[in-house]
Image (cartoon, rainbow over all chains, first blue to last red; front, side, top):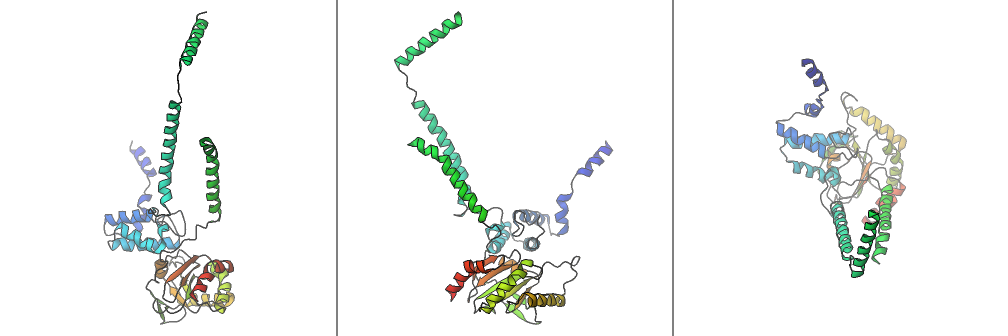
Length: 153
Length: 189
């Protein structure tokens, strides 16, 4: 059992702490904020990487700047605004609702609403169309009768 | 009537997706704009690349329309655009270089050496053409960060009052000049 635990422990990754080791923080709160920010801010050069993952120079510069700002006691929004002032909305992975990005939020909701509306309307039409006359009643009785006889014989 | 509309709906959706994706073929994701557009040049105080004891500030650049060209000797595309930029200088366009120092690393490149950088720059400008009135040395890339520069080459068009009118990422060639810069330059005259 002791050996099993020891072997298993070899597979446990300690990589999660690698980043924190390279930067010194005054307290744990700053370390957490730094990690959050470097994961949310997007590298302007290596697109589709956040600045924590990217090796580009500009990503390193942004990391260093985030570190300075975090140590100055800036809040998360203040740091993000600082970067947006310089690099535009592009630099943040959570784009704000603006006329240009509105379609991203509205379109999925619109598709769901239109889809449900379509189903409801179809359902209603189908139920309205069902008319029933005495002729139908007679036809039905006849069919049941025929099928009964076939079953008995 | 209703059925007809429903019948062509898939076709319409298909056409819309086609137009959307077709546009995507020609859009350039690298073409990102600084958040500083329409604002004043951020405050800075940086040394000249070639002269000792010479400082440049955002105030000292005011008074003339100029291009601020972010470049470095390490950047191949910058080398390519030097020729065309030199032609622009001959046509009377004022171009100021912002030298973007590729992160020198004590373990990798050795310590930063001003003399070797200067001789490298002089060599390259002699070979490929020198479009610059002067060069500002952004050793720690502080002004570059304030301008939202993601790499080199990038160029800013700044007017007499120090307002940033245009931000172009990538090289400047005759096509880019005609399409993006020339109309604004014309207006400023």
